Image 1 (cartoon, rainbow, N blue to C red):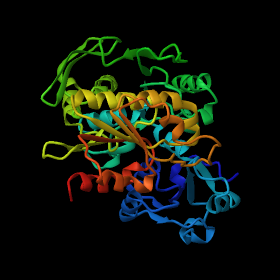
Image 2 (tube, one colour; image 1 turned 30 degrees about the horizontal axis):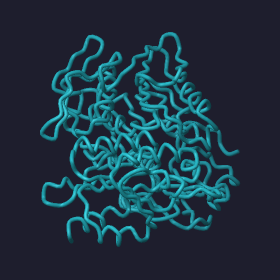
Image 3 (cartoon, rainbow, N blue to C red; image 1 turned 135 degrees about the vertical axis):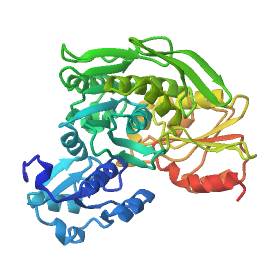
Image 4 (cartoon, rainbow, N blue to C red; image 1 turned 45 degrees about the vertical axis):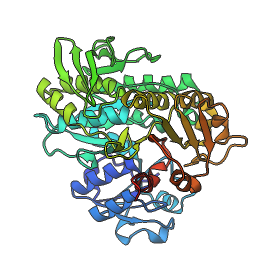
Length: 465
């Protein structure tokens, strides 16, 4: 089906189906930066598509082959990139397939870009976006530099892409969905967590763990695996691949010691094989970032960054958008407002406990919108337990994303077993009115749904505007 050419140099243009996805955006920007013409289709406009259009991507929002620009109708010079989330009956997808175009999943293009150099690939059911962003922030201002393809917006740069003209290193968020990370060939691989997820793809926990084990088998000869302590993962690495463990506590080859909380900061001493760096302070001072900072520091040092560069990059790290993003700090008389992408039970629990440690003795209200019917069905009990750590839970209907409803699966599957002071079901369309009528000390929005679209309005309400 289509051209089998795997050399990007033979193409002048690229058309992205699902162009508004965060993971697609950094590839579009990378190709634009390297002189390619870029166009694409997405179902709905968004803030991200608006930015991409301003940067030069020609994006349309009607799924009809007549909408494909004339310049992108030649299979000899146009590469087509699509995401697994695109429905198989998409008119644009089927037109390109029927005309013999070279078709690639996003992960295949990412693999093609990165195979020729050295790469740090960060995988995990949670923690990968922040860890990957920390590494990118350390290396981008270091002597070795990097290109970085991130799954979130690095707030230091305002983009999910970091470009270097002369660095041989790429930093890549290795996504396990649809086994996308199996296209990569890491020089250094980091595995942050393997809590089961995407069981619609992997079937069960055993299948999920096998997917990660296969990822570790793809590490290049002489490479390095850095994995969190206590994981069920049994890596399948080659004999000449060095394996390190890490943690945010006192366990592992790389770990944190002398951890201190105070004055809105966290500091610790990084200990590793033949390395000790005192006074490390993650720029986003939440407890889970100790783990992330240890992993990011280890990967960066192994890649060639200096201890001073690591320390500086951690301190200046502003976080990834939607990863424990503090939108209102409460210092000017408003409630605290925090947004986090947490969408697995362990991640939700860790986020809630981090907030309670950062802001003790304040009442925490969590708005959690479940993401996907299948994930709700598979992990309802875990979500209920995690959300019970909050003082109050507000939950709208499930965000379906790519899925059709599953009979008997709704938000109440989680909410009915949440054990906290107060729990409320509120349809998404009524959330803003509910927020207007209530007082909060800390309000936290959680989940991988599109709850972030409401954040500008929520922020205004809490500021009394």
